[in-house]
Image (cartoon, rainbow, N blue to C red; front, side, top):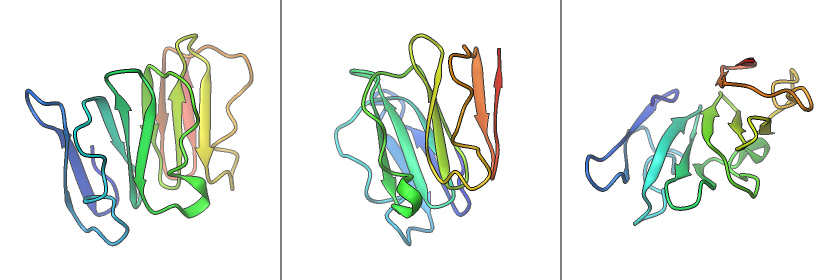
Length: 127
């Protein structure tokens, strides 16, 4: 996954987050140590991971607009936008957090998505 000026990958075998690039806000170096991830997603100056152990989300890097304050609960998919993130719950409804300047962190209530994608100032989902 690639953010604005950094990238991350899952290490083969350990499924740990390996990140490199510009580290102004800890988006490369501040990831939790010893975690195994299902997936990673990078935004502007933050990175989020979907934990393999329990399906919870953890984020690190800049805390601008609450972008690294992941909601509680279990998720099955994760997407980082520029300053926002969205994740799918097991019931396929979306939960988003971070900047909501253009409504990108306000998904439709009760809609079940098969997948989601987050961009700079938008989020889209396939129903």
